[in-house]
Figure 1: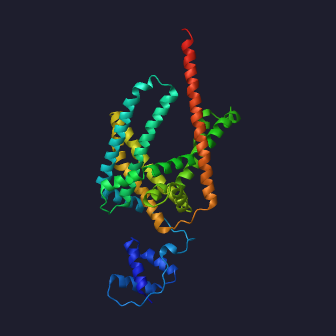
Figure 2 (figure 1 turned 180 degrees about the horizontal axis):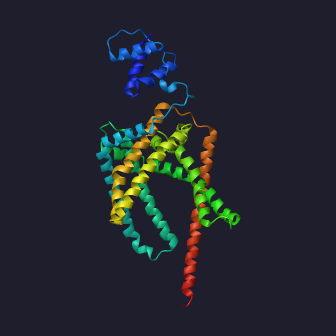
Figure 3 (figure 1 turned 30 degrees about the vertical axis):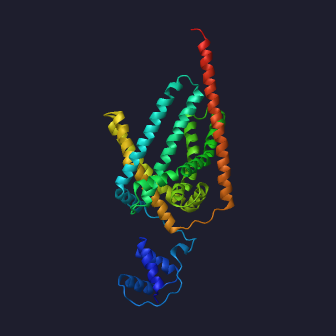
Length: 375
């Protein structure tokens, strides 16, 4: 027997863009009969029938949490993201131009301010200033990324660019802090490569070439970093679109991706491969004409198409997972693991900075020593 609650449920699911087949499957799993569902859909399409009062219906998000629902196919995700991009092309383009001009102005200004100092500073101080310039650029790129996410989320919303920019700057430091956490959590992957490189050379000396060793080392670095990156790939969207802290965004992203790691990897590999092919074709073709022209064309395409489409595609994955899965609370073990990786990453970052400082001082000492040798 159909009920008003059944009718309301079907209407709500249809408004969310779900197909009749998906809605039927959800309700069949809850024990509804197919003839009742057919009558319910008929009533929705032909309003005006009298419906008795409802028995309880469990929302689709509360159905069997152990059943693994499929992500949307790659084709569907791509067309969804392309539709979002087309609907908001000018908003994406204008936001990109605004932030490119801001970044260019800041970097050019800093370069001319510090340029006279580079010739009289030590290598370490020069490196530090370049780091400061890069950090400032990163802080400006953060609200740019936030703006792209907000445009993708507010696809059908009349939210103005002024409001989007205002919100994006409010999220600046939390977004930057999130990506800093991601970087230091992935840093221990570098430790594996460094250990293998320094201890692998004497063991493998005479058996494989240094070039082969470096290739193996690159793979050792890539695999752990890729595993972590996929688990954390939704954290930016969670931070921007939900009231979550940076650390909770990491934890929630991991719970969303849990049991969907391979499907998400495949979908991200496809779009990454497509972007790589486009980049390679542009550089290969236009480099024959002029290398600077090729780089300029690639930069424009990256601003106007590649970056916005990349954000839209990742947003489509996030939206899809959010619709089919409710993340479980993170375990203490997961929290401890993230904290441990973060602490190890900070220690490694300090060690790397110290190592770079040591190398630069050695270079300065060698330069001074060679300067004292008469030619």
